[in-house]
Amino acid sequence: MTRILGIDPGLTRCGVGAVTLLPGRKLQFDHVEVLQSAADSEPQQRLAKIGGAIERILDSAEKPNEIALERVFAQQNLPSVMGVAQISGVVLYLAAQRGIPVTLYTPNEVKLQVTGYGAADKSQVATMVARHLGLAALPKPADAADSLAIAITHAWALSRAGAAALGSKANASGGQTPAQTAWLAAEQKAGRRRKGMRR
Image (tube, rainbow, N blue to C red; front, side, top):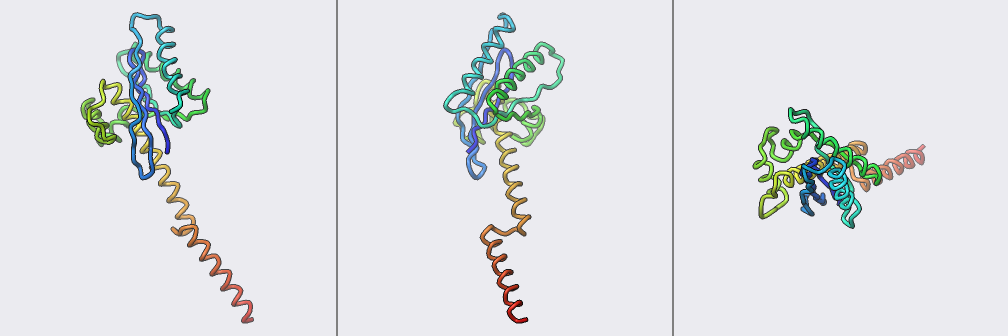
């Protein structure tokens, strides 16, 4: 089982959602919340408030094995981009301190994985997040749904990577199980021994 923390970074609102990847590519909803800081506070105070809350989550008993973070992307709203970049830096720093791997995803990558459509709107993302996690209600606000969508995207990426690794092992042994491989080796060894006795 792998616990994944998805983070939708922002200085005013920062969504954090945790899911657990279970065997068989199943997902378990664990937690979601939106961290907030007042827009009229000093930047260092805002960073300290959001960063301290993220630190609390990373050091909790249910700390994540992996972090999935939305990648900063260009847009016209420069203050918004700055806030996203600043919180992303805090997350990367805290994760590095604790040795937690971080993977970045663009918004389009997340939408495509969760909804099958790279230009899905907020309501479509929330609807599919609720469906994938078996939630009775849509996660709100949008920051909460987005953080869970990021976590789901990474969970499936890990699942695919694990399946590919298993496939590589199977191909290396001719698609056989370890027991079949050992049996074949024993058969070949016995065959060589029989040939030696006939000479």
